[in-house]
Amino acid sequence: MKSKILLIGIDGLNLSAALASAPSIASLKSAGYFANLTMQAPTWSGPSWATLLTGSTHAQHGVSDNSFTGHKLLHRPDLLSLAYYQDQSTTTFAAAGWPPLVDPAGHGPIIHERREQAKAYRHRVLVRDGETYGYTTIDAEIYSAAKYAIENHAPDVSFVYFCGVDEAGHAFDSVGPEYATAIARIDAYVQNLLNAVQARATTQEPWLVVITTDHGHLDAGGHGGDSAAERASFVIAQGFGRANPTWPAQLEPHELTPLLLTERA
Image (cartoon, rainbow, N blue to C red):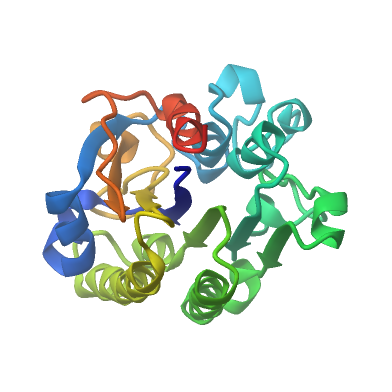
């Protein structure tokens, strides 16, 4: 039985801080599969998410910074597109407030537009602009749309992205109360999305919920360099209506998308 996949991306999340401020994420880590990831420098969101979402190295996708200048994303389909090409009955959903991830008018997008599938309601994308309107507001909209999609459409493969944690890390630091508050807010969204998944999940409709991040933060806030704190990422995965995945104990960032596709094979 193919699993439905919900991939939750939480930008700029230091896992050590999350485990102290996010009981839902901590519970998933404890009950599910877990592996540390070491991201390739430079640790900007553009190249890091391109790697995680396309299964490509920096050299292969050509994204070297957040300008996306010279990218090769047209030739590096994302997880949702690859799942559809693997099985054209697949329905997909993406919601993000950082435009380069999903907005065809932006620098990317990493998630391909796929107009024909969108017209046929096989591919739904929610585009928002947290850079302009702030991620506290936009993340709430992303959460509401994702919860509605899970409850009413149950897409086969979804990517849901939150950026409020990264925003707090840049505006303040990654060790203070503002960063912890942002993590707690996103954790509450994660728990409610999990509740929606659990309300649907059965052995006839198994789900796999996966959480990852694109980079960490220095204590003072910020990233982009090659320090251990900035390169730190992780994968958490728990099955509902099915067992946890039996993935290797050690992963490279570009291996995540191929592994997720095996759950749809």
